[in-house]
Length: 171
Image 1: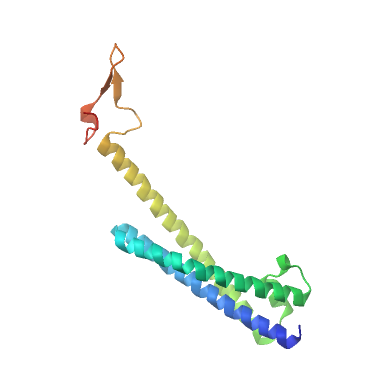
Image 2 (image 1 turned 45 degrees about the vertical axis):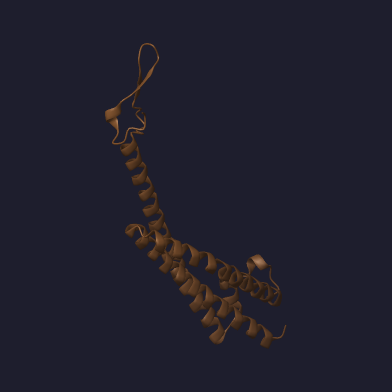
């Protein structure tokens, strides 16, 4: 590759990083929307969000493949191993406005990824709390408490405590 070709590849990588930034921002807004819809218990909107996520997954995978191909080309041009071709390594090999463009994208992506990790943790905690609360309601409603509401007579016949649950499943 020539220097002009490397500049073209760096410009393509910057464009790919911009696309990654847009995808990460989209993921952040989707996590926010997911939490909102869970709290509102809007099943129809949750289905729409799931469908949108499935459609977007293909676009994200294609962007990742493009970025990796560019990364491989840049690693070949710089004569380094693909695993060593990081944004920091590329930034060290560049100068001028392209170096600044890569540095800006790197900083922005780090910030967004940190924010995404926090939002993911919050969303996971909300989903876990909802699941715990639903299990607790089910145990209370149907008398499925872990303490066991079944006792046995001297003859071995099971006796279920009918007053232990809001709904008696034993007729």
